[in-house]
Picture: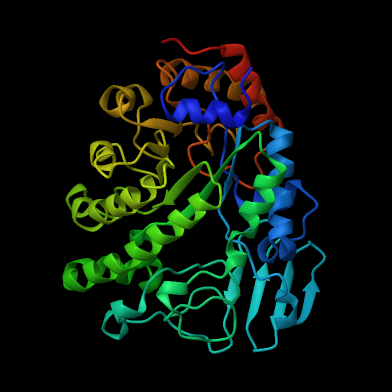
Length: 392
């Protein structure tokens, strides 16, 4: 009998598995509502986040874990003036420098800088000062970016504080039987976060050459972070490229502003012998072949209608021989709103369509929403066990 780590490794390689692996990406709010980890501990301590992901992976019997937050500085409390906790469990951290961080009991952190800094314009951005931006650490996004709350000019040759990899180390130590995946933000995602989505999309039209220079700079940082995660023992690296689907950019724009940069990130990480897959939400049915052309090993989410545009049977025919698939189970209309039996039946259909010749990981299409009932997640492994070994 395979363990989860072995099962996912085989599925990603289209090799035989004893059953289809199950691994969902959980929204941060789901961790908060379904564990006893406080919002502040989850966001700002490696120990808190590691405990949350391990707790729910074991509860839901998942075969793998996605670590979608980097580690945080161990002595982060030295920056803190006070922490206030509301009756609903939400917390607000007030830092000595005047910044604050609002941590809801069921949602993502919201950083409030003391200087109320605005997004830069494209004329203000120097690509030479860009490498990689992390929106979730202390202080959130800044331009030029630096980790923590004490401003400094980063050195690209020595960019990453070692504490960023503490969560990987903690989880890897406690879960040798599970597939542990790191996450990096794609150059494209970072471009949109740098300027704000509306401005960034306009800059593609008005300043395409400057956008390419910025994307090239982010490519270097994203690739370097993926390589370092691989060297810290992750079993795969997920490129989070959530806004690279239809509704944001056309297939032609995807070819110009996403494909070549993600291809370089993939190439660099592949040199470490670690598989890479891409998370892109929503409408991607018209660009599956273009996504495959980046050299990735798999695609995550594959949102079905009405959330997206991926028909699993069609996707399997088009690129299923080249890529593994993870997802396609409607995270809202099925997991959130349907009964346990309806979720089981839906999962069995996805298993029937996605699993032949292996290369399929049963998963929610996008993140599991905060209030998805636990019973609708525990049924997924039960469905996989009922379905059994995929056909060859």
